[in-house]
Length: 324
Image 1 (cartoon, rainbow, N blue to C red):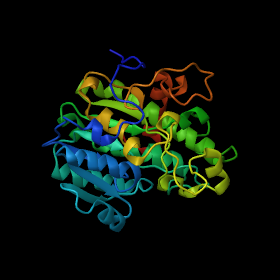
Image 2 (cartoon, one colour):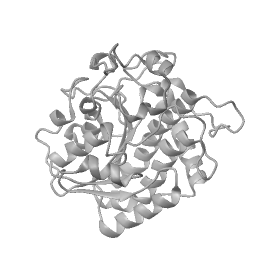
Image 3 (cartoon, rainbow, N blue to C red):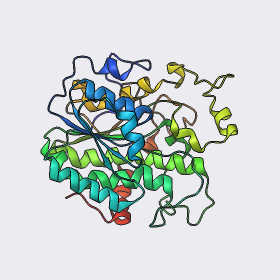
Image 4 (cartoon, rainbow, N blue to C red):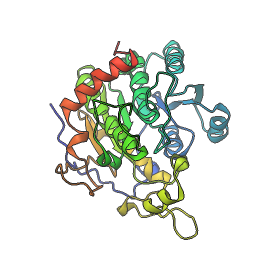
């Protein structure tokens, strides 16, 4: 049965933190992977899982930075991986599968935003590659462990930026059109949401459910490529340069930003559900197609099952990877 894209009354809200979500949740004996788990909301996600007793694996491009950020947390393992280098994804997955038979939670959290035009070694545009294709490959390679967990959940970090762009299936990698960093970011975030739709349609038959998440606007390393004009337009810093915190208007702390990922990964309310876009620790409401400025919901382009299926097939072709 398809889960309805509508709120279910979680009891939480925009100001909820990851710690508050985890109250009463026991993850003892569970294994989780959090990409980008050593900074920003990824780090807060790891902390929340550890507080509930989970063992957490954090794949990292910068091992030393990861070790420093994660020092002192119990049951955290760090291993090498770069989402823009396919061979490192395969190598990471191989090492994980040799060590563990089950993967209960996979949070595809890492990402880049509004970068200058860059390409991976295959020639694919970097935002589409890092945010979507790398996580697609990782999830497919880890599929045996997800199925083996009997109730695994996969969380894809999307964004309300999906309203900026749908998928241009004729030119996903900006080979024939002028590159726009925000258009590329919007396309990648739409892809993240559609990935969850497609994965859930497959995975629910194996006990694997998937969700996409809008974490909120949080000041992290994600903004490192933005100009001052971009930062001013986003209105996320006050006159002293400090982050503006206003959860009801999409401006959150990292602890609040991690809450929806943690809720999707652990909430008993979501048992038997999946394939939906979530925000503020709740299934987001479906918006009409022309709701271009509304950020507290999801537009049809990010939940379309036909587009999700087409993206899945193209992702298989671009990566050369399929579910095992």
